[in-house]
Image (cartoon, rainbow, N blue to C red; front, side, top):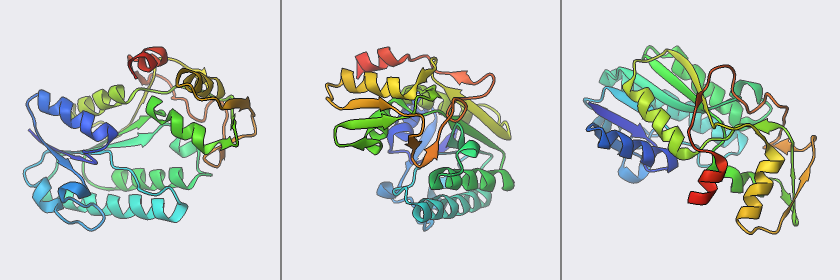
Length: 247
């Protein structure tokens, strides 16, 4: 089966491409660097010709409010129109757990627009909402750093390894469309401030984590439900300490 992975050269995309190729599928890793641009439409028709499934794991190059909205809205419309023209049978998209609860953030507003475009299209779909990746902990720390202090909320999170996300995306692509949303998360719930503290300690980073319930997460206040999944999510197998050991 031919499968196109949009964002196929990125962190999740490359791992998903590898998994599907090992299962014997004809997989196209689509990205601007490979001549496929979902903003302009360049190369899309050629990449999608004969494809039955499209997986969209592309992310915006800028998180500035207008730029990220323009990216997901334009990319979403262009990609879905090209899929309809090519007769694609299943659209699988990666989104974020808590997107609808974090609308004070321009990024999450843009992701909700992307999800709405998918639901409004006539292509059968599966939206996979994932929790934060272990691999993003350094960026979370950086976004909350002032001097040598990292000020973070003690809200609960349930982060997941990128390998487990790629497994879930590959499985979703090979399963029938659910025409709805599924959630994936890591196996452990932990306080965000303590998780980043463990990460910094393990990587030899001298910055000090300060717990602050008023601290914002990319501009949004958190509570224990903000970034954690609902009932019966798919759980990844990788625990944080095991991921640290491998990394």
